[in-house]
Amino acid sequence: MSSGFAFIHVADTHLGYEQYNLSERRDDFDNAFSEVVEKVLELRPDFVIIAGDLFHHARPSNITLERAVRNFRRLKEANIPVLVVDGSHDHAPNVVTGTILNPLDTAGLICYLPRHDGACWENDYCYVYGIPNFRTRERFEERISGFYSLKKPAPRKDKFNIFVFHMALDTSEISSVFPRAAADASPNLIPDGFNYYAGGHIHAPIHFRLRGGIVAYSGSTENVSYEDAAFMKGFYYVEVSRDMEVNLNYIKLERTRKFKVIERDYSGLHPKDIVEAAVKTVREADEAGAVIVPVLKGVLPVGASKKEIDLARIRSAAEKALIVHPIVFLRETEISEEIIKGIFNAGMKDLRTKSYEYFLQFFIQRNYSREEAEKRARAAIDLIQYLVRDDEGKVRKILEELF
Image 1 (tube, rainbow, N blue to C red):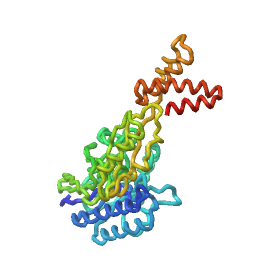
Image 2 (spheres, helix red, strand yellow):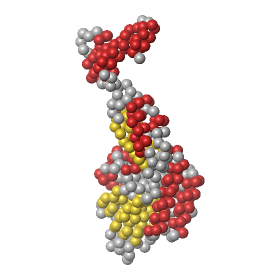
Image 3 (cartoon, rainbow, N blue to C red):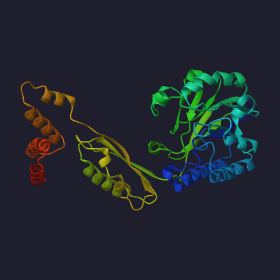
């Protein structure tokens, strides 16, 4: 290669995603992409790679499409080619529906790599090959050999070779940020001979070596889920020297909306107390325009239900935030089988005694004092007795004394 060059590697822009059913969030994804384009025009790379999930849907709205076209025209007018593969979101759901990437390719605004002869784009110093997204690991393993046969990857010996894909490779480096069970492909099915493997689908910036090349995921440009808030938003600016040495520069976006994720363990608290604590936490975190995500974790007391959590009250606790979106990971519990078996397999005890011990454990595990638990256990036994007898007077009297 006679001289060096540079390119942009970006992915997972998810244009058109109206997160939380808010048009403001749709605008956020569009604005993040506009910031990417602005930085591209400042950096003036030789070309741009978008490694899947350019759009959140295969058929985006007209509003989203118009904004995307406007940005692609800016790049086209600057003579910066845009090379794209589809992702799990903008992949064609069927042959009839297709994907919006096809007409954008026909219009000359992008080069949708899998659609072209050889699934590639090439210039004097670089060869770029891209595969489509197959949505699941099973489909990828079934169909990728057929795609390779039809459009054979052919890295050039005298050029810098780039392989573009959208899936999570089953490697230890990726499993550190992405569940291994959700991996889309074995790295053994990725061809050799490439200098740079430009990946999408992992919403965290990460890179590592693989068979003599560099595997890189640029991460997402906005928070598609609250878990994404833990990672920077941006893309890679990749400089390649004439000796094919690679220098990765991460370009951070500066105008993305602030997410405040607050995880708390509320084990042992009653739903009412959890709501009060969560409301207090949200009020303390309130900030103009922010997305606040309180994550409620822990184990509820015996008999308590997640349905008792007043989510509406938590959502309305902030005054300045764009939205409060609580996530509930609370687990419900019952009296353990060991305790129940210990009570009802205790030999010669009569049913009344066994029932009393059961109710006593029930109320103790709901955080009542021993004295109050004993009182309520006795009342429960008496209630059963008089309910069976259909003695409404006694039932009413017990309830009045209890409450």
